[in-house]
Image (cartoon, rainbow, N blue to C red; front, side, top):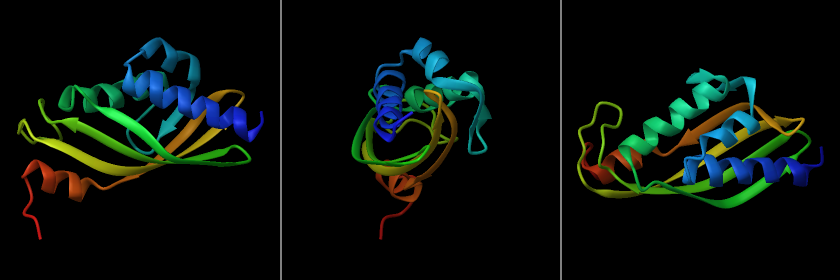
Length: 135
């Protein structure tokens, strides 16, 4: 597949699975052998990861700021935002709105996500939620 086709897979995944909770699309776009860093495998691991974030932030929105591809790798710089209304990593709901940055790196082959690695500003997110002191 071309780099543009690979980017389209990532765009569709972020929009339909993360933003719209359209989990049947995860079954289509996520390889059964998909590895999400150390979170889980396959479409089930993807759904569990999305569900955990959307439980904590029911109004979660992912916006792609930059999308770059080379070969079978696609890198997205994203801005995520949502209101903390559910348990998040053992932090009780605060009702606070937060916006944070994240970078995702996916391997895409044959129209499916094979692997995903992520780096997110969890420190900044926790500060916005009020569970860590601000500088």
